Length: 136
Image (cartoon, rainbow, N blue to C red; front, top):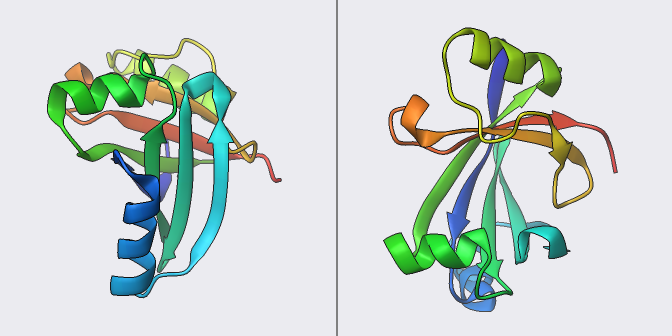
């Protein structure tokens, strides 16, 4: 599986405040903003070199991001790697003995990707997303 870092995902309570920090203080340009209803979150992305920073804010109290913040507080949520074939990457991960969260790829919340997650128990405590670009 050949991959490169696509983005780092951060869980935040206040998306507008986080956007102001990354835009006004760090000087980054907001490149994409969306609501992922199925994941119960609103998100915004900033380009940093060859990768992005993804800010995720819960819009539902029982969403995965809301549960993450309740358990661990705001901060780093996941790392995402861009792969050419997410189906093949998930299978290769399983063949290597890694535990997958997703048995099959699913649509990414931004509508531009297909994704699958690897469980943190298999990746030294880091939730890992495998992401395939499918365009916009």
